[in-house]
Image (cartoon, rainbow, N blue to C red; front, side, top):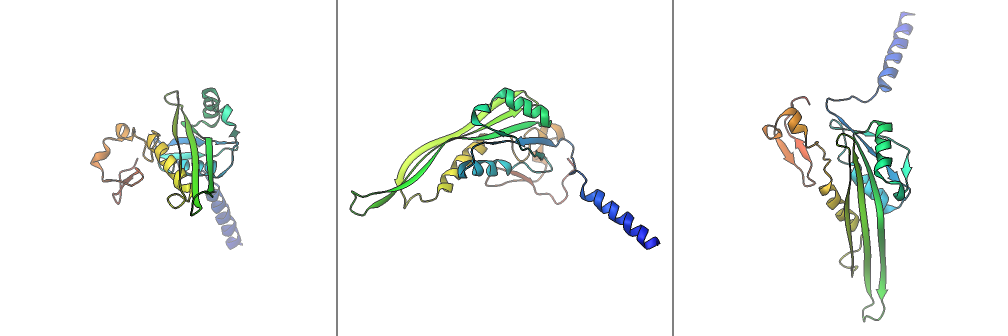
Length: 206
């Protein structure tokens, strides 16, 4: 009987732990990434890249089923979403133009395969703390031999690299220095993608 009671108590404790909320850290920011109604390889890739820097312990990435049309991405709409979800930052990746096609120039002696592309991507950002609404874009077009460019993700990656470089919201928020003292006093490694990583075995609590 006692064993049965202990098993029940243990089961209840495990259930409570399993359904507990994710841990919250001091000065953790909340970010809401909202998709648009456009769903294609470009839109999906933009969202995938945009999500990467926003992870605990510095960021709490909120979940939403909301989906906006590009025309609905306005300051008022993002401000409303920020209040609804209590988000510090709201980001919306928008594909304004995405064209990729390959064709053969039959009048060439060797029937050369050509790649032609055009893109215009923008990430809109609303910052609740500053009350600002900004956009960060990358655009380009070209026509080259398929022997030089044969993978659309080479262009998608390049475009998002440019946007992520412009975006002021990094893996480690830039104002952490002001809250916790200079980061230069801690062992910091900067990755090829620009992320800052604390390399100490036991970094100070933040």
